Image (cartoon, rainbow, N blue to C red):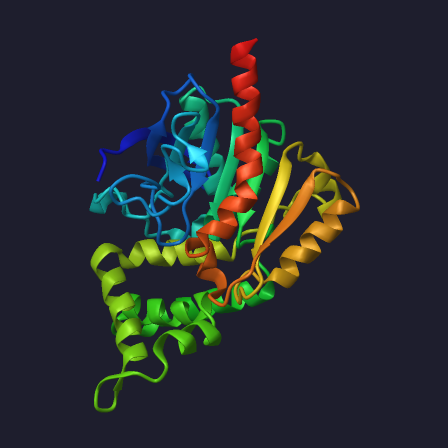
Length: 334
């Protein structure tokens, strides 16, 4: 793992009025030096982290030299959600996780960016929980982002999302192997019946033991090996706290405050942040703003398609990042 950089947050005021005396905000940067190129901020999802590219990068297909988010053109910044445990320091885990909201995380990320002297972001992108944080970030600083790219997420947690967060929390509270069981349940939401049936085809590994059961158990064990229970409870809780209109006004008022071009990417088979909600978001927003577009990944794989269907995702992102590269090239020639 690349050595993490750290920004210290002192006396941070949470949305609920409580103050956290100290929080370390860990992050990584990739590509061009800070201040030398346009900035792309990448937000990780529930079990993700700041290593978005490189040897163990989880989005290498999108980020790298010559990739759609080209590290020869951009500075990429990725923060770790405080308390996600990626720093490996037990003392930095968060026990009072119900005090935190997605909006708090968005404000922490902005404070970190300001500490780094970053006032303008070319593109702000994230999938699932990372996209939820991106929505909150752009509302917090509506003039500071040129392109918002929320993927497999929405501007609010629906009752459907909140219901699944509740079930996950019940598993985390009452199971004798909470991480493994919660992860297995979550995988059935992140994928689809079509995806699982097409992959396993009733295959058995031993008499009476099905391959799909082993696959689920392996996912649970892998998460237990690299994730802490308190981190998972925090990330799960954050998913239900997301709503850009809370204490701000109507959707029309909030969406009109955003000056970024918005590129909403949904997944047709997503059973978590559903495509129906994504389409409605864009349709509603188009009644008030012009700078919003909708793209839809076609996949049998469900919510996790944003980590699988890279060719489609690249085709959606290419015009955003290629346009900037062309403009940058022309300016150099001038």
